[in-house]
Length: 186
Ligand SMILES: Nc1ncnc2c1ncn2[C@@H]1O[C@H](COP(=O)(O)OP(=O)(O)OP(=O)(O)O)[C@@H](O)[C@H]1O
Ligand SMILES: [Mg+2]
Image 1: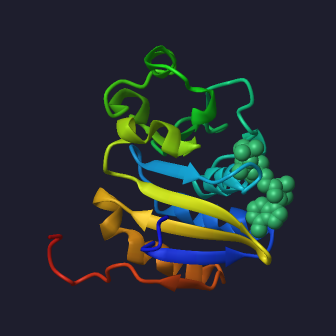
Image 2: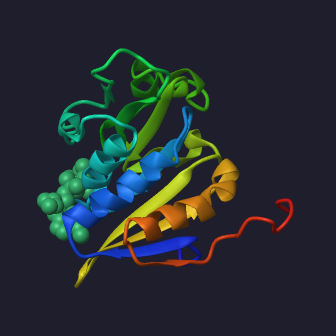
């Protein structure tokens, strides 16, 4: 699955996975969807902690949303226009009613207003997520974890910036996404 990822990073520690999340958070804007897929303990929540930090939020707010389908993490300082983070555990979502109860309608427009949305177990609700998202697959490997990132929709235009942010953070990775200046999307 997902062998044509745009970026592949091997993280040797939980801190490196958080660092990857921080870089992703730095290039997010309101409305963005970060879809996370990976088995139990793969590091999805760890990546969301970094994501929160990258958005300027306190990563200590982030916990596995056990028994809750969705949590919102807000800025402690007065609102300044930066997006908040909505953290969804799709594992808990078993019906259309569940989606409605967390405020997800159609492509989640309402929930995404002023927020970045991170979804654990995203493949369980893949059809409702649409085609504008960053897909992150996390795998257990002998060295730690392998993160495979695939850009969809507007993320194609940001994936090179993300690669540069990873490089700046000292995260070695393989980049095979489109570089800018390559013309329009087919
Ligand atoms: N390279 C690594 N990246 C991420 N986590 C790592 C790594 N090495 C070790 N860990 C540990 O693996 C665990 C990952 O847990 P985490 O809760 O983030 O997983 P998860 O994918 O959210 O699991 P769940 O499916 O239960 O929600 C943590 O205890 C973390 O410290
Ligand atoms: Mg988790």
